[in-house]
Amino acid sequence: MLGNGHSPDWPAIDTVLLDMDGTVLDLGCDIRFWQEILPRHYAERHGLTLEEAHQRMRPIHDATRGTLDWYCVDYWSRALALDIVALKRSTRHFIAWLPESRDFAARVRASGRRIVLVTNAHPEILAVKDAHLGVRRHFDAVYSSHDLGAPKEDGRYWQRLEQRESFDCGRTLFADDTLPVLESARRHGIRWVYAVQRPVRDGPARVQTEIPGVDSLHELAVGLDRAVAQPPGA
Image 1 (cartoon, rainbow, N blue to C red):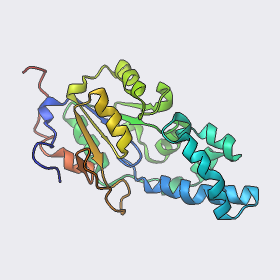
Image 2: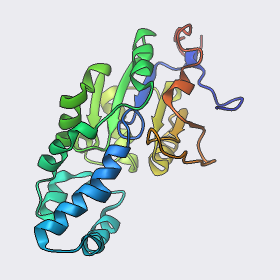
Image 3: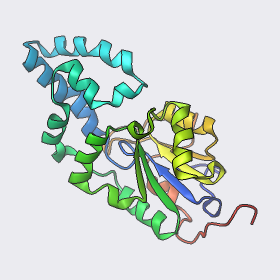
Image 4: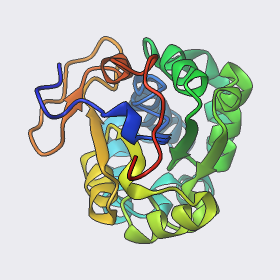
């Protein structure tokens, strides 16, 4: 649970930005895809053992981590000679919501605040997940980092998002499960930044001390239903 001084001051918040995978959707699906399903298909395609497949893929992961290519299915399809989108579509039955994330989004909207999905996922992957779960209908707007030409780890992402959305950083809440992304958002000046510490529904908590953390978005909703957003200086 959030300690004293870390809970959102809802009257001082009028925009909510939420990550997708690991924040509103169960990250277990993506972990299974990238660590198990994709290496297995890569091994079968190239006549490798599973261990050899992991060894060949590891340098590509290391070279692209934190860049837009890390999240780009076109890049990975070329690098591995596999149709990543088709594989992702074939495993869509694993895609699932995290507990209470839809309820939290509905409560934010009902309170009159703007709620925006901000994801590093490639637009084609976003489309697969939206077709399966109807993700978009829970948000006022949806942005892929590919739309903005930079990943959320990059400060340019937040500058470009702010130009699109015209939000006030001092009156904005952002939740994500990735520490470098959260640190980037905080450096940009977003006031209310929270780490989702349990991105996999049945997985262990990722305990860290750098950013206030919650197990689920439900913990952030205390006081939301009765809090009317107040204009700055009110």
